[in-house]
Image (cartoon, rainbow, N blue to C red; front, side, top):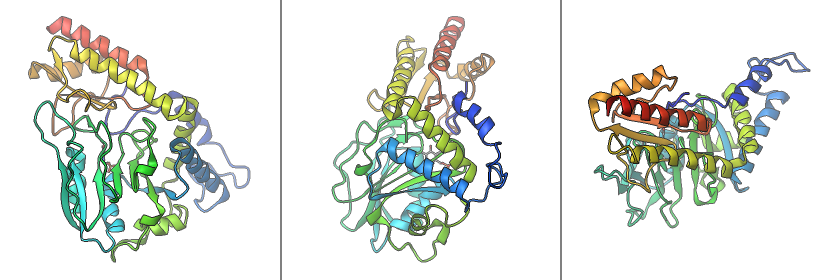
Amino acid sequence: YNFAAGSSEMPAAVLERARTELFARADDDGSTAFERPFTGATFGATLAHARARLKDLLAVPDNYHILFLAGGATQQFSMVPLNLLGNAAHVAYADSGHWSQRAIGEAGRYAAVTIAARYQGERPLAAPPLSPWRLPDDCAYCHITPNETADGIAYPALPDCGAVPLVADATSCLLTAPLDVSRFGLLYAAAQKNLGIAGMTVVIVRDDLLRRPALLVPSSCDYRVQAAQGSRANTPPTIAIVLAGMMFDWIVQQGGLAGMQACGQRKAALLYDAIDTSAGFFRAPVAPGHRSPVNVRFELAYPALTTPFIEYAAQNGLHNLRGHGAFGGVRASLYNAMPEEGLRALIACMADFTRNHG
Ligand code: PLP
């Protein structure tokens, strides 16, 4: 089982489907998915299918565009301010930990950034309080990171930013639970966690926010251009889009986002409960109510046992449990594809390790 935060495992059924369909030759030109021109009808149908599935899954309102863009979420840290700033002087960002701080750093290159709310960094760790938020008058948008992948923190609810459009980096949580898209002006998520493989980022943006970008924005990074050309202004990440379509189909088969949420909550509750009832051998640094259901961060009471535990888990087939480099400790990422058996195996391994070292 792969507990990596960076790139999730794929469901076995999707891998099996990919094994046959990626190599299947099209009737018209004999191409496989690897060779197919992005301008052709066959890839066009694949793209339209992925877009329609995502629109259904998230009930995306008709006044939003769904873009499938090349590159990762970090690229959006620049594309968001460059495309949305317009004539405003300010942008607002909530600092909730590692990835929001990375987004703030990039935005600061293009605009005056106001920190709308601040992460305290004191234990137990928590998302910034939901009010009051500092939003300057002349503010293009307010950016949040609803799930902090590295810190293991999730907001308990969305902030109310009034008329200021809310923008979210939903890279580690999109499609793990239902989401009211109409609360956002723009959402983005890199694909490698819950939507397939690296190389593609989904951007969902409200029509009225498509404005003239800053002068030096490359046209391939101009949301208006990509929206007008259906994400085909230049060659999109074709294989990542094919696989995202397969992931969306799989999520529908699992009961859609309500199914994903129920399964995810069950998995997270089992693991946090195992941590909380370990008599202090393991402990979670994040306050209940702010704990991420997808990136479960925990530590051992004896830090010297961290590496032996991670190695013991790997010997038992439980991989990539090391915490983010900035924080150390242990992190188990429970993205959609992690089966409950994987989690039960982790909990059994924690109990065995405690018996041997407690
Ligand atoms: N934002 C969040 C919340 C993330 O978890 C990550 C990666 O882990 C990123 C941004 C960076 O994504 P990428 O590596 O695709 O640029």
